[in-house]
Amino acid sequence: MCFRRKTNAESNIQDREIIEENSKTIDVLIKLSSDEEFIEKLRYVQETLKYLAPSTDGKVYAADKKIRNIIGDLKIALNKSVDKDECKKADGLLRDLDVAIAERKVLE
Image (cartoon, rainbow, N blue to C red; front, side, top):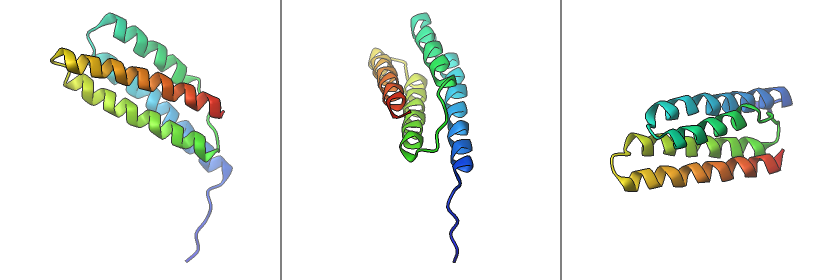
């Protein structure tokens, strides 16, 4: 068997795709939310995600996947946000998302 290593260009494209996916998924979260303040925070996060620079570094790619996972958790929390506990969970996840983006920026 012959295994081929990913080239830097392929790694960069993969990271660019996950960044774009993360940014576009925020649109879904905006549709799920009814709180204007929360929507404004989501829009800010979306703008921040749009302008992340793709990288060939595996640590940066792992950070982008972590961001994607938090966005997925946030989507679930917003779908379930019938009671105040779930709304608090969504706020906490949004904070986690901000932290994950800040950590990712440090790796650039």
